[in-house]
Image 1: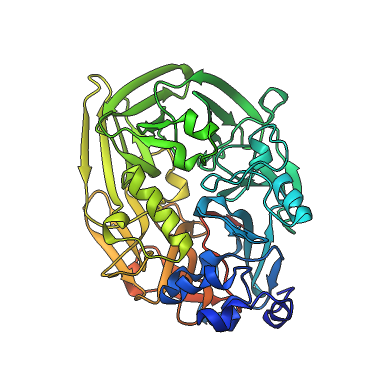
Image 2: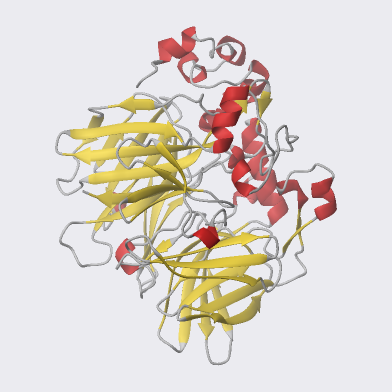
Length: 504
């Protein structure tokens, strides 16, 4: 680690510790003031949301508990918001923090970790100024410098993509940012083609087994679609008027023939926005309206169909497949927007949301393509961040994996993993206990295997008692047996959103 805890302590970043009752080592890694840190002492699982200062982090020869599989070789990249405060200001919304990209390298010599903040134009300008300069998604900061477009507010904090030998940090509303895959040094914003410069490129591209990438972006009342080759060239793109509200479209699903979007009834109050409210607080949930199901033909972006389901708030999809007659997909239904937004701001204050605000459950959709009839099914498991085997993206699939909450009580976050077999309906679960927060886990196929689900689940966790982060590795076919290995950092990192593993 380039800046040890004692050095951070000497730098004066630990002043909150004695007053807030926080572990000094934890407080040494956050720029928060005593008034900010104090509420977190009663909810230790929320401590990583205090954020980190803007320094890089690095550690090698990490401690391994258990035994890592011999075939697990490559890099696990993980992105998420991490810098939450500058000067005397602190972000109010989890989505606002500047992006920290991590690289966990699994090699024959062991496991190493490095993390760098993405050097966006926003990050560099604010670091030089020592304060926030532009509005956040959920924090109404006055624009202290001209905002010419979305990339002036780009935090590059949500996900990651490696395509055509290049690595990108992704955000919701602006350009991808290119980084060096080995050093994580920032190279700059990516223009996929001259006419697409500055266009939104969402944080949830779908990568098929042959390397083809599908993605979208939303801006104003319009949507953009992309098809990108395995080598990183744009094959097709289009921009069109959205068929309804697109106040928040975070993810989508891809089948053999279609792109599928669920457009929740979220409208932007332009008057509130002009009056200085944040984009998040200017969103209005219209629960009496339908959620539109937009189905786009992959072969011809102009062939689009719109269906409807009752109002539903969706952040994340698992996967989709179709056989020409029916289209089937899965997703996680979130709370309605007001409850979701309240929870996302509460945790930034160190407050635990109520159990009702944490109710996110799996949903399954079947569309009869001839009639347009939609069937919906649900389960009662509390989950988020669904993933599938990367070899079955846009193909018929059987297995979905999620972080899950098991008898979690009042505590925030997930404490276990769930494997759901869609054909049998059976599930496997493992619970770490209430001292561990579980993040998204990705499936890493075993080398040489062609069987869906034959591989390892790999993801990050935070031990709130030890105040350390670790990576956990499971046999994806035997989750209930518990992790086969844990890889411990000598420090903790903030909670991330999404990651990808790339085999060596």
